[in-house]
Image (cartoon, rainbow, N blue to C red; front, side, top):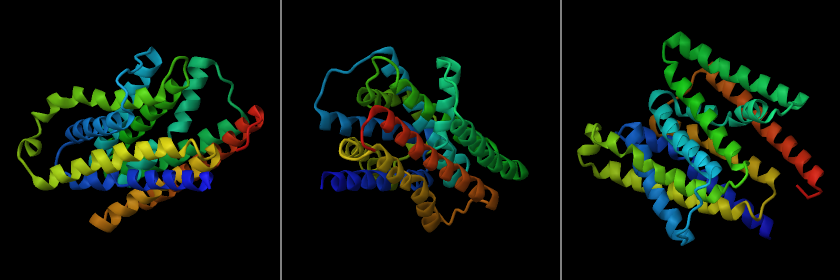
Length: 284
């Protein structure tokens, strides 16, 4: 029963997260304004839920928090410059960059599975850029790829000594306050719009803050393998909502490349998680 409840919580979180791309398309604010206000609202929601006043400021926690702030900001920027499908899939390429970080900074020796996963993912990503170079709109995909790099930084930093993932999430949203200066250069933000404020309030609460709480509760009751599979619902649903609402369709090469990236990441995550559980002797 607990496993089922945990799976449902993660499913709910993934579905709620998946509306990020659509919300970014609806909002007339620029990406920095969206990331700023959404992050601050999410911080308030999570902080109220936790009811904790002391936050860890270890180097690894702060590094993770900075990476998280960069990820949310770059993801919003990518959504404004390319299709939501491209933006979310490129962000989910993070495991490849985690491997690269481990190889560079921790002298990790990649296995055969690691090399295959990196090769397939990079091939899928290359298809995005081939298509976008043909149209001249490659910069949005480049920003999306950077969000994947910074997203990898979140996971990498959370594995370092003295890291506190929960506090990193809180700080990451709080650091959105450094984006406040950008608000004064956003004409659409300075012009009041009930639609914009309604959407951003929903983003900060239902699309980011509450899903984080649901996921943190669900992950405690669900195996890592099942969690990684369920969470993949987000990059699948994200472009579907955008298509249904604004008829945004990624190109053929992007669809093919995205399928390769998602399938590779899902299979890789499942196999690596099972290997880790076998080593630790815990059930997957």
